[in-house]
Image (cartoon, rainbow, N blue to C red):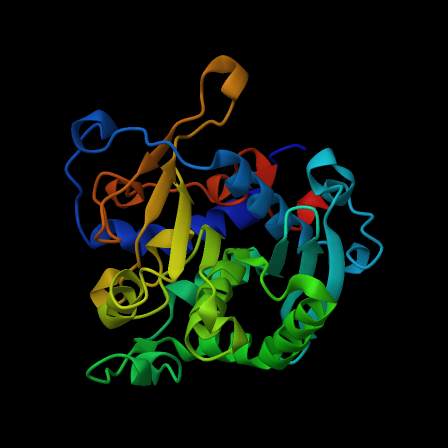
Length: 315
């Protein structure tokens, strides 16, 4: 599928993120000086990226008839329920693979990427007390996130829980749980993963969250929660791709901070030609040798992970 982007969209997206370049000048360093290629479950990452791409094809999910739905890798995955709330423009689906004993919760990114990137750049501070998990830590901690991300999740939370209960009642109570999403969907997926490990029936399970091109969601206490008290139950694999602009927003100077662990993809993903490095970044969430090293950005890198086209253009 072609990597095309309108000139107007490219220019506006560039204007929206150029402010990031003024925040700090990152010293140029090669990846080999700081991080080395690390063995990760690439097949699982590509599978979740493909599911995140399918989430954009909302009208084709029930019939499992979108282009990516028909690929061999998706053959054993069956949709269970569509998640949708038109008032918050939040969409996704729950699916199951009974052959792999896995249930998937997938959230769609925004269809209006141009305007959403502009909105991200204009976001205020994270000033909403996350009503999940904080009371479970000792001592109780105020964990602040941007309200828009939480309310998007909250608007489909009951639908998600009903779908998971349906899977559990059909023999899937001990299935592995994978939560995934791209862009806006990545932020919702992270909050959903927290909810599942903290306060709901799947709290006895380890939750695997695969994110692609996620914005920053909350303050450093939010990142600390994920890498601290919940590290043994919530596995966050946050993928970034080269010059993707979205992981740089909202700005660090507005007290936002990424949660670890970041897995950084090289510019091109072409295994037959040897272009397929995945770099494991440090535990800070803001590794200056990974995506944070860039101050020039490409929206096209946001739309492609592992050569999977993420966005409505993939439908």
